[in-house]
Length: 104
Image (tube, rainbow, N blue to C red):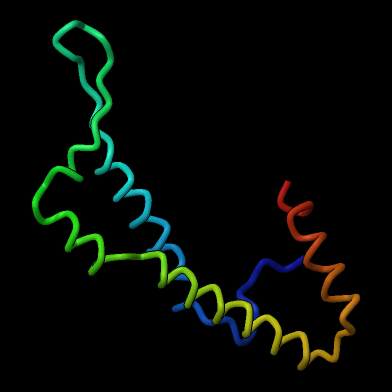
């Protein structure tokens, strides 16, 4: 089985998806502050939310809509590829349900 890049695959789309995931992980790391409280217990704070710029920045830099746009584009590209290969609907469903099993 060849592991090359399929013909017609948009690597820019893959880059956008990876960038989104990295940004989401980075922002979640920023959200959590772990320390020790005065009484010695574990203290978990969401320190970034206390910053005055946080509310405006969270609206402007919201990454989730980009996930939906990229996901829609990927689904559309996959559907067009399926139609171009004249695959039946049952073949598409069967292929999609087998994909997670192949990764295990």
